[in-house]
Image (cartoon, protein in one colour):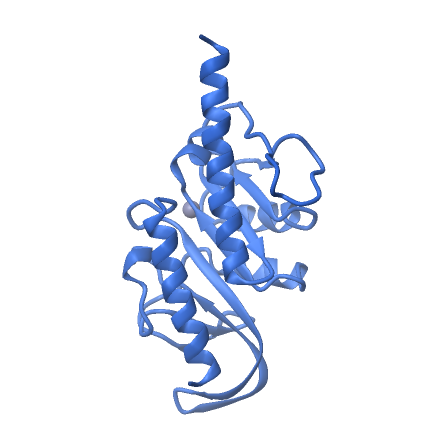
Length: 205
Ligand SMILES: [Zn+2]
């Protein structure tokens, strides 16, 4: 199997898993991964030792991601392959890859508990599992409209020293060294929010 096809297949499976875990209700959320060094044909164009980005299309539920509708672009967002249009957050993903050369995947969700917290002033406790725990709560970045340049700036700045962010009044952004790790972090963040919700509730009884 070609490398690109292998990555697409893996991305398809993980997108279905993310949806199945309830992290991206409806058409929400987007996922990308970076192949740092691809050396094969995409459509009829030969790509020689070039980094490419695979990203989910806009307007498609993560449960419906397949080998055909995963969009492939170069690192500037030029379309190379895939049916449909890339996620409206493509430029946020591209910018993050430029400032975090150590990561190869980004998962953005609207998972219910974490997103619920994002609409309040309450913070999500950072539970064990984040490795080096720096602060007791997951960082929150200020509100900016989805797809806006302002959101690109805030998110890019926010992930310079963090692997997960809560986007105010919006959702979750998690990055990882591969798609499995980014997806696990997005899921773990949701579970932290759920635990945080239960503890807030019980503390008030
Ligand atoms: Zn969103």
